[in-house]
Length: 412
Image 1 (cartoon, rainbow, N blue to C red):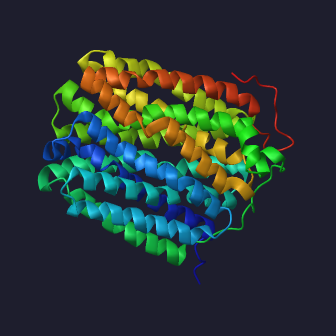
Image 2: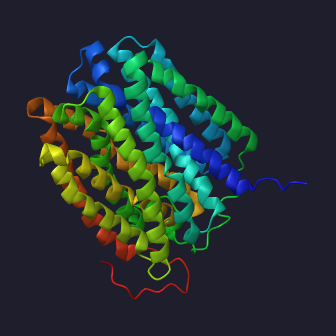
Image 3: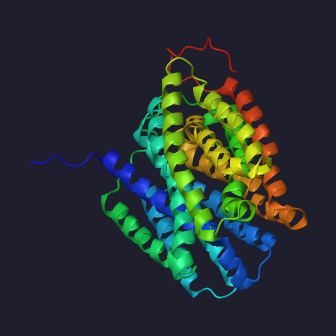
């Protein structure tokens, strides 16, 4: 008789599929800014405000869903969130005004906040601290791949069949994946794989606000997210304007680059951090800091360099940015204990979006309206520098993963 699928592996695969669809649905709109903007006669600032609407409601939902996740079963909450964001994606086919599109973005934010909080907490209960980087690096590969597929769906399908068609086609798999997770997915016991001892900073909600490992990882990610959120929202349109590409070509270029860099960068960063962790418990923070630092020179070339250097600069900038995806998210879940992990993730999500990408697309759009898009996007480089500084400083607070962990290596 065939052995049943490992419950942890089956759940990881289903959550990975849901995360992929989550980011596909989020980035469809960014892949077809131009036709939507033309239909609704919207300014750059108004188009950026659509991203703000998503994240404002994402942040409003996060504290409540985090509280629920630490007290009730997370599986039905994950299913509810997936159904809600899929419904919001499907609703785009009935939208014929900017106001309705804005409200649709808000509904998307509520649905995605639920999933984004609970999935990492569930995965952390399947695997111990030392192995979480490996599984979360695989889980977060869905971010670049999903974003790229969203760009491609919006730019390619939307250019041929109209901008509403990609939303319809991409909504349907979300309902199916949620149903499969309800049938096959499992929920582990909270804290079943935790090895780091509890203390007030790690084990209580109030302690989170005096937990330096959690705070530096959170605000390092928040400043990074300001840059990444704004860049990802505007990059197809930037290439259309600066390089003279069509909407379809620009979205294809960004999508293809994001897929290649996202897979290669995320998995490479996860592997390097995993090897580094064997001799230095600070590796998750240090790898993340170097990842952002190495992105800066290519960002300068991308936004202000010669037109011929735009695509190579985009390729290298994205590769280095994606190195930190698994390690930095693992640093966050490892910095807290299971009883408050969902709450901690919800606070983290609130902070990274409030101080990060909630307002950055709109701010960049506003700067672009008064100057040009290169200057608007170039402003994000300051936040990358701040992120690097915070993460290097945070390395000194990284928790020991076990008693035998070596601590002799310096923090930078």
